[in-house]
Image (cartoon, rainbow, N blue to C red):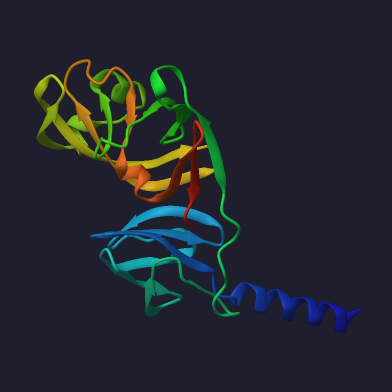
Length: 214
């Protein structure tokens, strides 16, 4: 009985000492999207994410992370654990049927809040009007960067913000650049290239398919 207890204690201690599984699934100047033991989070330089993993530095090519007190350079979508490199899981894909006027409409979420999108491959960023941003709880006037944007109606005042997450079906992207425009334009939230450039997408016979890259 005592021997069994000692073995259990030893195994538990080894499990507690096991290094977390860490993947970098998104890179930005000054921030990285980390997947730590399956939990994904955008973590800025100097901040600590799940499992006590700290982002020391980050740019669009690599990130330096401190894991269990040890600093290591991570490239995009590389996973390190006690077993070494682990291949990413099967990619998630969803299909969107073409609607009236040849447009693609799709329901999804922004920061875990329900949103209806109009897919717009001509839009540089995800774009929305002030009312939509307020409904989603986006504090664009405090956290956003003032800017001027060119629209179909001319030039409009706006704010550049970073959304924590944009998700369509099972395809989620963290740290997505967006623009909030003053007034009532656009009437629908535009799903622009700041999201689409970070997923795989294609059109085929009246359908648009969106696939997670990682």
